[in-house]
Image 1 (spheres, one colour):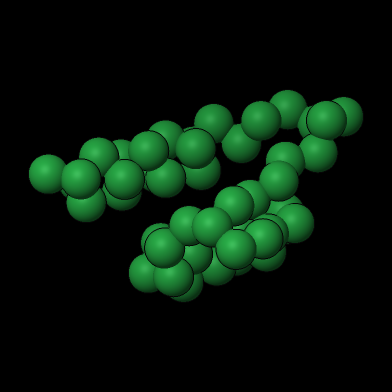
Image 2 (cartoon, one colour):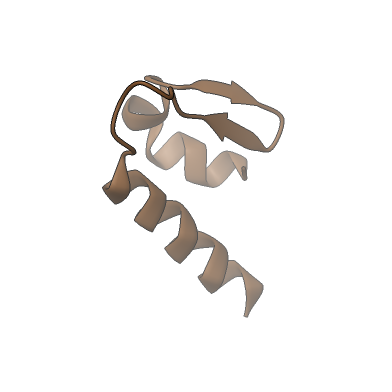
Length: 48
């Protein structure tokens, strides 16, 4: 996970366990779809 992405969404990422370049979502809760969409959108823009 790029630092810029994490810093711009720090409140949302603070709810989840993070590793170097990763974020872990709990198995017993619904996936945070809006956060996942932001991450994917960020990665698509940075790949171009």
